[in-house]
Length: 402
Image (cartoon, rainbow, N blue to C red; front, side, top):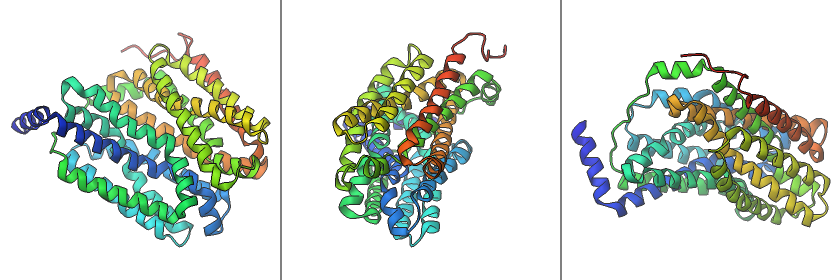
């Protein structure tokens, strides 16, 4: 094992160009995998029409994927921690290739649900270990930039998954969009098999540190806050494409470009969120939740005035994307004794919020209408602001003495 570790590290460091290629492959693979989760939000109107189901029922495909990640992510990541990274990642990409092909062929909602359930089991395993592997590939002196490169692929998928899905659905049809994802996953599996070296398994975190963290009420409060934040975000965002088309009157051929603008502004939000979170994680959470509320409410008040609507959607996109790194860093700081587990817990919390948001949004469409959905999302966001404000008080949820 030691000989393997030394030779692998030496090979990686002695060929920096090849190391950069390997990290780039990791980033594109991360993009393909995370896009598989979020792209479907842009496909919901088209697949709902094709499968002859309601938009709220189609939205539950988002819930299924998110809850599967939430429930199985930490467990499967721990169970597969002994598997070599190269073989694990290639296998995950082949699973995504097959699942996206099945989605493209799905004759009904039930087969499509199965095609969503299978890759949801593997997504958190890849996401939870990709940055760690990138650091190994780059070597000690370049780990930070390597991790940032992989997370650029993840962030791009989070931000552009929906608009790319909407544009691809309009241009090629939703089934062909899944075929494209299937082909991309297969290509990444082949490139990873050809270019990626075998890497040693990283050292495991002590179980005592993990169990102590899971008994810390303040850490659990941070995880719960992430659930609230993502529920607020996805109660409205899950149905944003439908809102732009049906309420704001944006032509269907233009909805994808509006969502692309949302994503481009979101990349700026991702950068700002990453810069401000270190100094004050809870303060950053409160500030961007407030901006999220302002953007969603303004969009509801100005749907027919497209110039003002664009500004509202820009504010919404800025806050939405900033909250991804803010929540991740906030939870990892709260669980600093076992950051890998903390990161996995936040991914589960994010997916719990994503699933709950799709449920609440679907119920909101049925009971208050699509045009008022942002008010429901804003109410949840305000609750998150209150919780974060209470958590800033030193006496609140104090950690037990160790």
